Image 1 (tube, one colour):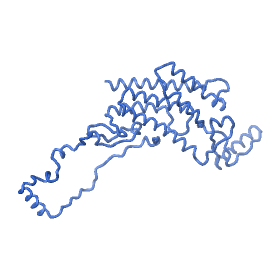
Image 2 (cartoon, one colour; image 1 turned 180 degrees about the horizontal axis):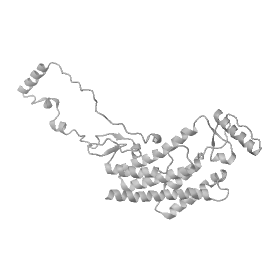
Image 3 (cartoon, one colour; image 1 turned 90 degrees about the vertical axis):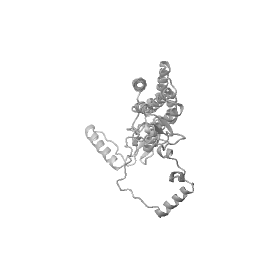
Image 4 (tube, one colour; image 1 turned 60 degrees about the vertical axis):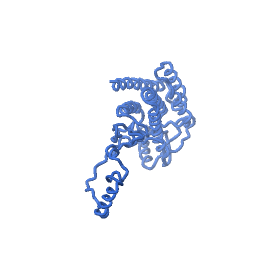
Length: 318
């Protein structure tokens, strides 16, 4: 399962009262029904219609589910943690049901606040770079640790599934892009091992490119080969090496972010893992700054999550 990332800002539908008048109907011959009831009373069979139906007045006045009084509202899917607004439908006791598990209003607010902060640094859709997979793993790890420290086991499991399905939703969006008819596999040697997709040019793209080449020829005096429909120059900035992606996820999935040495080791491991991809794309021609730009961003994300956790703890402890 994957969360529909593009649908998270949609507004939940509101149930409204029907403006049409309610129609009532008579049930058979009223006099006959009345006579039968009176006869049953005289014979001592029943005292009233409630007894005849087998329903007590207590059950009518208190229509709760005795087996689980909290299961009287809507059961929301796990995308409720990431939606723009809080769910609208509560259970009879004011709680919420998420994927069959109950959360109080405070618990759901607490989870939503932290989880929405966790995904705020992730891409909102489109293609994914290797650094994006690292951020997704950091966010998922942070959320799972937060859940273990603040929620019951059943709630932890639902929160973990929600974060997993959010990341799956991001990967699904990328897959939709890369599966389009105009996207093809490229052949640029070592570079294609890490960025293996390109876009075929259509007529409009070819015309624009050739106009640009003509202008460059006029300025430089050099001749440029004209592009043709179906050419696929350049690459899509989308990580395509599944083994490298898996190793990056593993690097950050189980790190204790409170352990400084463990975090530093993870950052070092990431830089070594992606170095061949950066080399192949000529991003390390002068120095390793691009590698450290990535890991510096990861460090800031981890610190942001830790600060958010402290703020959330203060808010809900009070």
